[in-house]
Length: 209
Image 1 (spheres, rainbow, N blue to C red):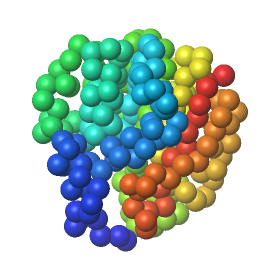
Image 2: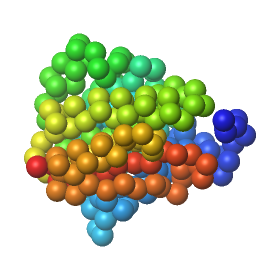
Image 3: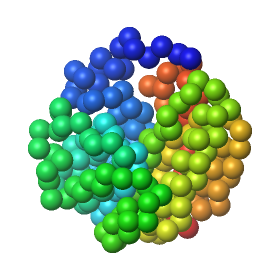
Image 4: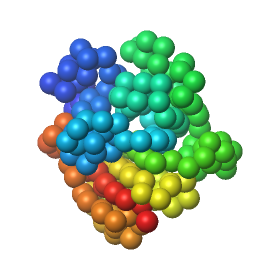
């Protein structure tokens, strides 16, 4: 099992720029490439952004989104663990942000998410607790990704986009297949900030049908 205790370039950069985790640069690269939040050529915010961030803790992706959208749109974030308040400088207290602490498969959590209307972007950097056994870890990752896909099918507005993290292996390709059915475009993408030894990747869906 890899040793992630020693901070690397991305971890140090994240803390210097006010983010609790390196994962922010994965989202930043995907936003730049696929225009999830900003239009790639002009950098202008997409209109009427309503974003759902599943598996949000410690909060890097949520912070990135809020720093982009400022007081526009809506961000709803969900995780079993609370978000870190080390770097948010009050952003998590904004009226256009709502945090739900709980399990994304819990019915009460689902109802809270659905009660806030349709979403134009679904983000998920959720990962299971790892064991070091690749077969077990990919199986758990698949279960999480399938739970995220439930939200893609039930909570997204027409034309919406999504990205979800998966641990490659087993039947995780079935997640990409489903995304290609639900969206006009479905792609696999591994950002530069992913650890070279990691078997994580991201599946991106553009243009919800």
